[in-house]
Length: 232
Image 1 (tube, rainbow, N blue to C red):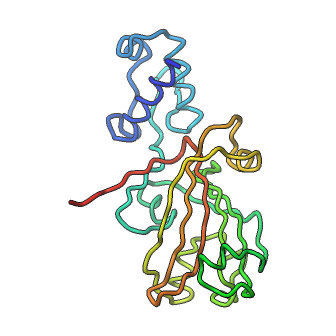
Image 2 (cartoon, one colour):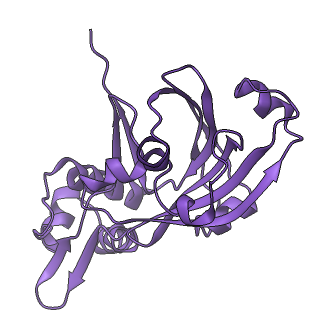
């Protein structure tokens, strides 16, 4: 669709700083001339930017940039709160499920623990500027974190592990794929129709070699940019 091309280009210019936060977009007439499209196409693209909370329309003044999309450059391991803290984004966690399981042999194998050891199962949704943007399913060994609770999980897991437990995190092996979300994920991410979403699977380990977390996460298609830095 033509409006999608305009929308993607405007998002790229906002995210890259061509249009800075707090400044006005070009006028509707300028956008029509610049993209050589109809008024309807420009209005539809701008309306989508409004829905994404990237811009706002001010009566009699124009359309102004509110913020950039969540962008993560892969240079080192960092939690969501750490990444977004530098982007002036507010992060809120909501726990939808917190239980104990023992019948997950594949997860036990990935965490390198005995099948009989109990695991916490946690489903959280991360809200960015009050929009549901990441659904996260995590498994953590009960033996490592006997005091883990919902209150703790409404904050950063990495902070809990490092600051509260005094453990040193070494790193995380992460795999990214594109998947079609099921109805439950679409509802949690407030998606009105199906689009491919980025799926992340990660296993994190401590400096002493113990694996402390397996997480599978799904990212809203309009909320996340991933960049990779590859040194030569």
